[in-house]
Amino acid sequence: MKEDDEDVKKLSKDIINLAKGLEETIKQAKALGIFTNERELLFCDECKLVEDVAFNGILFTYVNENEEIPQHRTVEDDDTGLRFVEIEYLKKYKCPKCGHIIEYTETDDDLFFTND
Image (cartoon, rainbow, N blue to C red):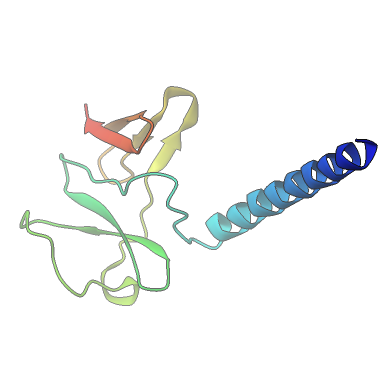
């Protein structure tokens, strides 16, 4: 029985270390501009600023005037350089182009965003 307890303690410690490593990797990815898929991509109904993810995982934004989902957008050609600003304590994002507030609510499966 003691052997089992020791195995469980070691496994628990290993899992905790893995989780800490993953958390650090996610922080580094965000710092590099990589979308970590922790939320849905944002869009602003007011000024039509849209987030997208390039094939290499880099998050970028562009203005979508036509309401259709455009094809072949690239970071190099289309990125506005603007990023939605998280207002963490309010669980909202602010559009960097027009200041519109985008609210999100968490569910078990996903995050759903609504424009105020």
